[in-house]
Image (tube, rainbow, N blue to C red; front, side, top):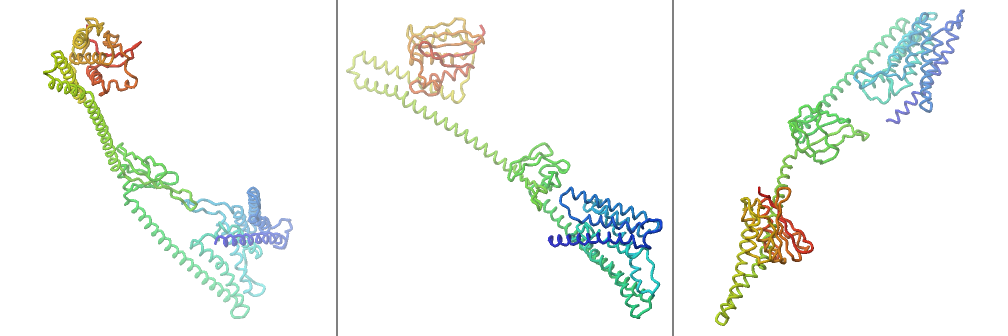
Length: 604
């Protein structure tokens, strides 16, 4: 269809070019023949001479030229010549009013051939040349039709005309050629399929042919002697009127059918629009429709319910990023945010370019709450697993301690008691005393382990609380040292007035465990000293003369269980921290282990 239209357009321009050449030639001839040639004053008749530049302008309008600049130059020259033709036609307005007006209209139409004015609706545009051409064609037809009935009159008489027949024919040819010069934009456009325009395009030749056919019928009627001239003219006029009425009825019927079709199309379009609106509003997902510039066109009911915004067109919310299945949050009117699963999709046009966008959001607040609940439950399970792992490690450590540190004194007690019972009568008094002493020593050791385990359980459950009072350090250290160390094993350097703010029982256990650790794993002499620090604290230092703690054991030196070391340092750390202090280890120089306890000092 487009190929055929393109071919028709080329043929139309070719006919228009031929019409332009013909009009220019007729204009040049008419300047010598109309009204007896050149008048005595030497002035050439205006309407006839105006046809020359008008025909050349029409020819220029259809001549193809390469390049945009050359096309602009061609259009400018054609418009200039058309204006010259209009001016020349206007010069003869007093002598030949009908021909001058037709020439002015045709010249202005040629000058404004490509000028279009926008319609107030903005949907279609209006070509300025169309009414000008219509006026020139009507004037030419009015001047031409009476001359067509000349054969029906007797010889030597005939109807008068508003202008000479050659001039009227040239003007009609000029108007027709101007219409054919732009078939794609004029009233005869080949690519417009609207029903009224097709009807007009079909009726224009019939309207032009009707008076011509009527004149031919009247001339034949007179020449054959069927009727007198007046009757023949009347018959032709009646026939032409009937044809025009039939054509007018056809046009009205066509317009009516087009109007009904248009109303039907509008109703169908409205139904589709209502259906689309109903479908949009009934969707369970929140939908927002936007144009190509991301301006909100419409939102559905679910969107208003979800966001609380009732005027999203003038107060648009933040748009989700392009994509499918994206987690997004929409701000609500009350300031809260609702989590959604967002989709931003483009609506392409015929060329593939986006003509709009559709944003769809699904409320996932319930899913988010379920995910958060699962996350919290998983974290709870992790914490429970960690506590279970800690408890399992405690059980394993406790089992290891019981099987090693506790089992050793129990097995020693059992062996010594069995030996003492079996050989009591045969054993000397001093051997029996030695064995009983060893049993007593292992029993005390076992009792100490049980007490430590009991204190360990209380520390692990947080049941130990400190009742802090001013405690003299020298008195506590001397009391503990006298009970567990031999003479000369412990050297004490503490001021009698130095006191610490602590639980006396806790401090006694701390000093006892530190001295036992130094005596059991280090070597005497043990140096114990205490000083008051600048920050108002008291620093208690217990240093042995042994080899120090191995590097491999330093990370866990204050841990719960160290095989062979018992629970002493673990209990020391917890009791010191319960009293608001801290404990740390340093390697002594040149040798030995140094344990430093920091406690809050009591007022002097």
